[in-house]
Image (cartoon, rainbow, N blue to C red):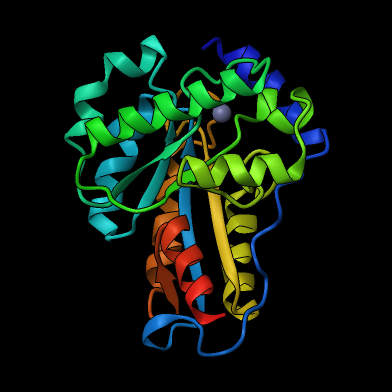
Length: 243
Ligand SMILES: [Zn+2]
């Protein structure tokens, strides 16, 4: 993907109406396991090559899981496929459609979702259960397709997908390290679900820099007694089971 195109498309999409709900900012006390005060997840879009290179080792070092929304139809993904299939146990894959492209109709949507699910099953056969789904924001299907909310819900169910909460991260929110650190503190205070969502880390597009990402890992580590580090799906299932 052309980096400049990605940035322009992403910022334009972020400005457009996105129907994805925000993550829960408060939940009943006692919701999280081991008496943790809040839940936190990390997610990474587009399968940027700097993710296997820079992020995988840090997730393992700090024992924090991450969900990576991949587009297996991209040449850029295929080139690094071995790194994705051999990833450590903190790496979970999510569906970001096959091509991140424009989706003209519902048949094309099914094809994009099913293809990505099949690639995830092939690359990570031990990853079971529902698959987290991130709408490719540049061509959000809410805006492109003539599709009702009911049809979207039915489509997710058919493909065993759970839509990720509204994207949150650099460069839209938490533009600096102190802002990011204050956000982590705020999440713990709120008791709800916090998350930081990335694209490139230490290169590629929309990159806050490796120093920023390492500062986040250190910040999370410093408050790990209060935070439940889980994947989006684990948090979703926890909330569902407590209802
Ligand atoms: Zn994307």
